[in-house]
Image 1 (cartoon, rainbow, N blue to C red):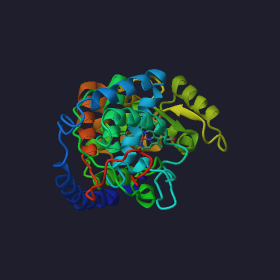
Image 2 (image 1 turned 60 degrees about the vertical axis):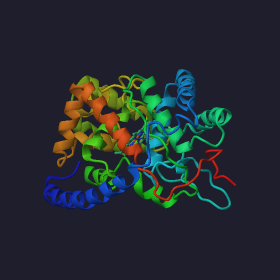
Image 3 (image 1 turned 45 degrees about the vertical axis):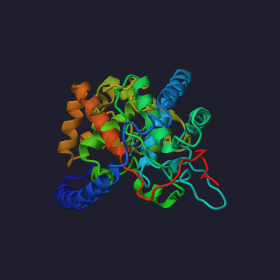
Image 4 (image 1 turned 120 degrees about the horizontal axis):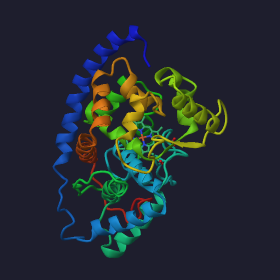
Length: 337
Ligand code: HEM
């Protein structure tokens, strides 16, 4: 975590950034939000939502990690050019996709599930439901199917005809950034620190690779966690999965108590100082994170508040649309010809 000497200047820096980026973020949100509605497909594809639900139900029964895969795809979609399906595009002779971005490569999974759902949607109402909407609905279903909250998903997004590898490398947060950098990334998307902490609660499901938690378990894990047998045993286990070098793709859950259930246990692990990623633990242990630490405490005590803030933040994140407009792709991996 940051040194005490840094805290004052970081505070000022953060305050300025919040003012500047907050205004920017709000104007982006205000401009884009109006296009999405709850009844967008009511006439053109009334079965769109049941189709997505059925496919997600099968996928999550097959493997609960599929829920995590889809939720993360939606997040990585929305943070780059807005929620426009850009994350799904393959590299071609004329387009460079986002799949090789540092936070995506060898990491994002679940593209085959998107294909599966899209095939069903195209069979029912060809050319109607966008891949970006598919992801937004599927992410909500993913959360619900593993025990999380329900929320209505505003729809009407279009799929981009472009992608941005450059923005994917810049805009998607990485696990070794400090709290100030993380907060500023969310603020630049119109999302508050509260939205961020709630959304990071997504790490109650899914896995991370050794590459992404090595710095944490050979760094300040021992200092943030309690010196008891439970914490030591957990740290030893993590270090046996993830040696100081090699085995980069070995995985471990971010919520080791209930990795397949969307609950608030993840926040309890942060209170114990046992967050798996540096970025997760920053929410509680950063010296400048008064507000975020309070939220972690609140969410760890009250799952209903967590669920409410999470659902609201998911709708807010889903409202970041791409002002460029676009099309409804027939195949989520390629722009229409
Ligand atoms: C501070 C911001 C965030 C950072 C730094 C971050 C970082 C990460 C990292 C490093 C992983 C593991 C990837 C790997 O090792 O291959 C991960 C997994 C995951 N993230 Fe985040 N994340 C953040 C916010 C979010 C948000 C906002 C969501 C959803 C709304 C989300 C959903 C997930 C999910 C579900 C997984 C598990 C994926 C799987 O099991 O395949 N994350 N995240």
